[in-house]
Length: 286
Length: 234
Image (tube, rainbow over all chains, first blue to last red; front, top):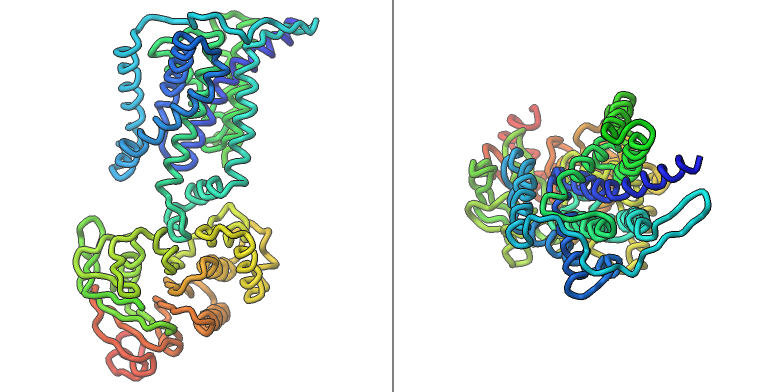
């Protein structure tokens, strides 16, 4: 029982990062019908912010997190204005593939500037240690991604539902033309959504550095699983992305625990296939 | 109030409207009639910033608004209710109306406007909690116009408000538009339903092949032999 609980817990932690990536993808898709292939790279950049904050300033990732979110938010705005906004005026194929190209640019830029070798945080982190509950051992730093995922999900929900800007984003996602007619600047709604998604990935990257190594291509795997989580949750559904991310983490870890770590991804795929067999548009898809 | 001067506009560099001119006086209802594809909607889209002006100019209160984006026009006092209603389908009726007042930040003022809309349209109030895309076509049209009024426009542009509605509702919509005008709002209306529109309007323009070809008071155009023949089935 305790092994199962431990596995479940670890699964939720692993799934939290996927959930964070997936929520960003779902937000961007839901609002502007752009497939954000660069979400994993924003995660990677968040990890590097955390790494340098630790190396140069000795900061814990949890302290560097607001900085990382801010850096990625600003970068998101710049990327939207310079690249995405232009692609949106182009043919549908360039709209679909632009973020894919962007992700390659970001990976190789990171390689150029930060080097290709694997890194971990050079300075010891203060937020560490374990909490022993008897039936469950909790590594403190692994709580960070999970708590972050919960907070981000809550904040996104609140933001979209109750704030003026959030409502404007929702309205724009339903009908861009009508949004303009009621006085919303659709372009600003798009910019904020894109920047928010990248800020979320940046914060997730920070959390991840507590227990994961970083290198320029680290985002690729998370990106792929994040996409699967979005497909399973229902494209555009942030709640769906959040829950599917967690579910995939659990499937991954439990398969590794009870079957064989070599085939743990098969466990995830089986869950995905079962989910979309019964709900072809995803669990929360409409 | 609004002056359209020899405007040419179209899609992707292909002109649809070649030469359209019209003038709208404050406090009047001006109609734009013409057969399908004569360029009425395109002209409206050019006025509200959705289509580029290739030639000519559009003046609002003496100031050029050519190329000004629609969200900015709302703040200037121009509101457009598009053809096909374009409600935010997954939002409640109330939220749709609130979005209409997006440019207003004063909550008390928004609430005041909402109440005055509800007074004007009690049926909309009854439905305020309902999701907009579950309403009937007529109700949706009422909500769309009401949403357009929430920004308290000085100029309200209505594109095909009666499209797809049954005759009884068409009468209702037209009465509603009349009341809007009586409250001091200037109205531009594009309609296929030419007779009812001309009867209601102070002044009207007829469009044909992307040009404004005839103009006159509503009554005068109704009596015009040429108009009768071409548009009124007479």
